[in-house]
Length: 262
Image (cartoon, rainbow, N blue to C red; front, top):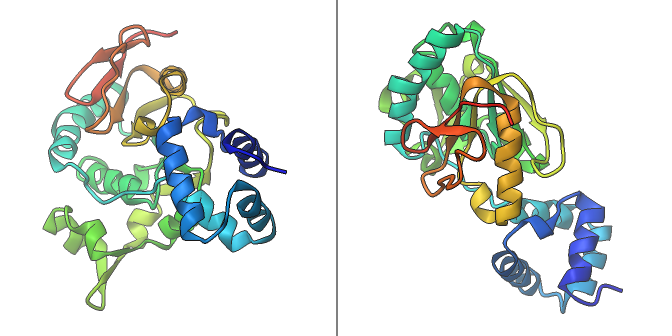
C-alpha cells in the first residue's frame, strides 16, 4: 500500500525511472496533488493502482510531470546572440561539422529552431542535432513536426515562410529538410549516459525544477560532454552561480564556455 508521498516517489521511480527526489519537493508535490484531485482519486494509493493498470493515464502523468512548455525561438534576443556571436565562434574554432545536443528537447521546437539558425551558416546536409527527452509523447509530437500558432508566434517571419507549410488556420508543419537534421532519442538527464564530444549543448528552462544537488550533477555532466571551448546555452531564468567551480567561463548572458576538464 502506498501511504504517503515518500511511498509514491518510490513507486514512480520503480514504474517510470523518474526520480522525484531530484525535483524541488514542495513545487512537485503540489503539482501531483492537484493532478490527483483533478482526476478524482482519493489519494496516492488509488492513483498508483490506476497508473499501473491504465497506460493512457500513466502517459498523461509522465507528460504532466515533465512540465513540457516550449516554443520556437523562445527569448529571441538570446537566439540572436547564438546566431551572431556563439555559432560563428564555434564554426571558426571547430569547423562546420559541429556536434550539437538539445537536452530535454520537449516537443522539438528548440532543436528545430537550432537547425534553422544553423542553416544560415552551414549547409543543411552538414547539420546533425541530437535531441533527447524523457517523455515518449512529446518525442512523438516532435517527430510529427506539426505545431499550433502559439508555438511559432515568436519565430521570424522569413523562417516561418521558408521552413513551414500552413495547415488550415491553426497549424503549421515543419519541412522534411529541417526534420532530417534532428535525431530524437529518449533519455533521462538524471540517470542515462550523456553524449560526448559536444560543441554546443542547449538545455533551457529545465533545471529550474530540480534540487540544487541535481542541478550541480547535471552541469557537471554537461562539462564532461562538452569539448574544451564548447558552449552551454541555458534558459533566461537560469544562472550557474558556481560556474567557475564547474569548469565554465561566463561568455555571453546565459551562455557558458567550457574552459577546463573536471
